[in-house]
Amino acid sequence: MKVLTAHAEKLEAALWWLLVVWIPFGTRKFILSFAPQFSEYESVFVYASDFLIAGLAVLLLWRLGKKFFSRVPKLLWIFLAVAAASVVLAFHVPLALYSFGRLVLAALFFVITAYVLEAPKKFDAVLKIVAASSVFQALVGIAQFFTQQSIGLRLLGESQIGIHIVGAAKVYTEYGYFLRAYGTLPHANIYAAFLVLGLISLCYFWVRRKGEFRIYTSPTWLAQDVLLGISIFLVLMGLVVSFSRSGWISAMAGIVCFFALSSIRRGYRLEVARLVVVLFVSVVLLYQLFQFAISPRIEATYRGDYSISSRLMYNKLGVDLIKERPWGVGIGNQMPHAVTHRLYQNLGMTQRWEWQPIHNLYILMAAEIGIAGLAAFFVLLIFVLRGSGFKNQIVQLNPQKLVSVSLLFALLIFGLFDHFLWDLQPGRLMLWLVLGSVAARRNYNSSH
Image (cartoon, rainbow, N blue to C red):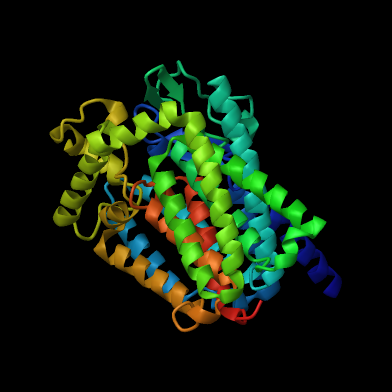
């Protein structure tokens, strides 16, 4: 029995690390579509990550038995129960069942993450993978931008994109349109979100060294400065060529949160100050290199271009749905419900490509699983943050707690502008990985 348990633990470790590595790689198999024409949000897919999550859950259930279920927070059960209830009231029950199954897998990922990351060394290892993977994604995105097309990584989930491909995200400049970088993720904004996680992770590895004046003379520390500095610059460049304004805002929010929390600890202030200089110089240099595209993108924000005005219309649609059906239209059902009841058309959105999910995580969640579902999610968030010791030990928080809270804050800010954290696989995995990492922090002591 001990031999079997040892083998199971090794297999668990292998599946876990492969799953973390695979988060930005959207390898999947199309099964069927519920819509007359193909729609990402009304289709059934099987992802490679599904098998990894399911395999981990089976192994942990076999090894831990009933103890596995004891690790599931009661508030998570309540959140899932409310989401399950929305299936009964759904406009399209098969689609709702599929969407609920996706949510269950995400919840399993949360529980597994919280369990695995009870070991602080594993938490650091996860952030190293995220940081390294973000550098790889940045290089892929930079290559896509300069070639203005996909670079042949379809097996890793890269979308078929190009400057002349209809539907590919582009940015307008005085020199014409330029393709926005996707990496191996489904859209430029999702790519940007992953780079935000990687950027904050790199900041964590810079600050956690603590400020010591010997860094200026030690070859090891200087080598770390160079490696981390180049990595930060590359990820920032990848974030720039995504031209995701939501990503830029979320990155600033997450980094400011991390710096503010880190600066409470006197031992980290020197490293924070040095890192601010590195970030400032990198941003100034990148702005000079890409000003021809950044400036029009920012100016379009002030003018309220279509991507902003459409988001406002989607949000209005969502608020109207919530008023009409406060119990929700069913998980995964916002789009088909709105199309069937001509809610998009009533707002002047007559083209099929305009029929998209509500671009706000919280409004979308309330529209699909009801106000009770959104409330259950917020209560779960509060529970996770309180469990991390964030409220009562803010002065004593170690860097692992600081970065996990900052990562969560960045994603929650991103949720104000987009929907992928709820209804697309890479987004779900990012959100529930970070939630699980915050939940795991409650067993750490405050020293580092």
